[in-house]
Image (cartoon, rainbow, N blue to C red):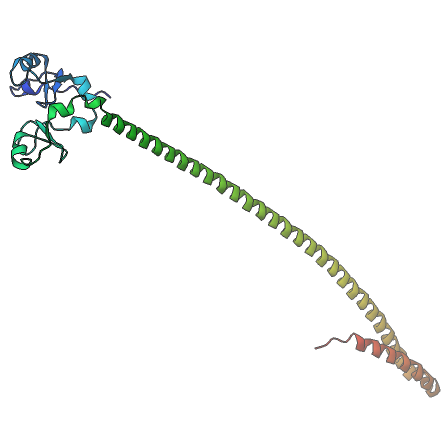
Length: 249
């Protein structure tokens, strides 16, 4: 967005609004075409150097804000004190720089300053610093990208380990369930076999009970005596087998 064209400061004193065409850094005023002709003819200002308003608007804000006059005395800077490295007006020289022996006319100091070694050195240093900062920014950006890659790599490795652990746990679970199923089948089979044997034993014992009752009712004492001996052997065998499987408290 283009900067607005400044208004002529001289015309403004007469409440006239006219666009300025040049800028006088020594007067620190924007000047229109008509006032420029008068500015160039007056004795106090005819040697002032002006620049086009467009050039002035292209100046860095820090440069455009530089005052050409002493703030303390409102006088034009005419000298430069080498010892204090500062511009001075005539009043500054009298008040603060009377004993300074290295006072130079400001016009001599500023002559050719833009083509001086000091200006070129400052420019080179600024470029070097800018390049250094650029390299640092690039390095940090690369570091950030590298960290992101490392982060993703670690996340991938963690996910792989987790997958491996999950798969191992799944396998352990399947193996354990398989073993438990087989153990359960065997255990249940053993119990079924045991129950079947117990059922057979019970049937035998119940038959003995029935036979004993029938013998009591219908057999002779001699028959009962002989049968008791045989049944007693059978009962002893069943008692021994029953004791082997008797549950413990």
